[in-house]
Amino acid sequence: AGGGLPAAQGTVTVNGSNALLTDTSGMSIGVSGTGDLQVMNGGSVLVTGAGITIGQSSGGAGTVLVAGGGLLDLGTATNGIGIGASGAGTLDIEAGGTVALHGTSGLGIGKNVGGSGLLLVNGPNALLTEGATNTGIGVGQAAAGTVEITNGGTIILNTAGTSSGIGIGQTAGVHGLVLVSGSGSLLELNTPNSGVSVGQAGQGTLDVLSGGTAWLNDGNGIGIGNAGAVGTVAVAGAG
Image 1 (cartoon, rainbow, N blue to C red):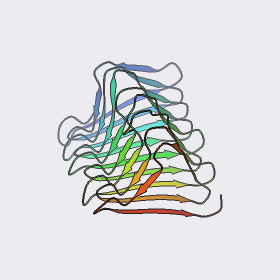
Image 2 (cartoon, helix red, strand yellow):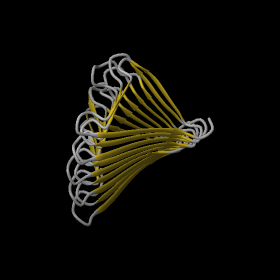
Image 3 (cartoon, one colour):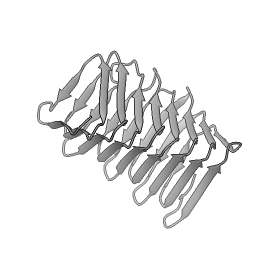
Image 4 (cartoon, rainbow, N blue to C red):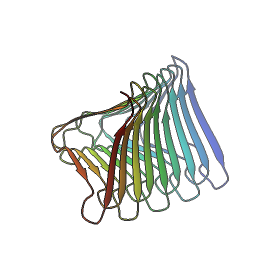
């Protein structure tokens, strides 16, 4: 869906309350060039098969922006979102934007060696959700990964599997960061069979700052710093 060849640029914009794009075979954004997908002002993108890769190959750079009542919805037959597969990937959910996953996988941020992934959930009513069959969020899977929930943004995981929470810093030598900052910003886990691992095999950081909230209604609590790994959790600021 954009940026297929080196040095190529591609943009897809879905803008307005009656704008709808349906995809049955998945999307790759920033394959080897630069690709952008923008879903704004009530527009909707419905993905019913495969999944979404943002920043697919080395040299590729992909950005997905969902804002202002825009909806990006991945159906029950999809396999999640990879942000920074082997390139640079950004998923940016701004005020009023919603990304909803209902399939069999979750989010991988910094998926492969050579990639880098960034997830931004920023502003009032900016929302990312995962349903019961999804597999949570991996932050810093094999490359640097960052999640920033700021200024009233929200992530809610309603996942049910045994590995469906959040893993931060999942590979040796890799750093993962999750930041929850600002009044109204929320990370909520309703994950009865899983929890949060900060520093699984690499370096993991969870920062809850300046009025942000992490609500962990999970089954396994927080694990900090597995053998050979480094995990840090900081909670600071008025809230």
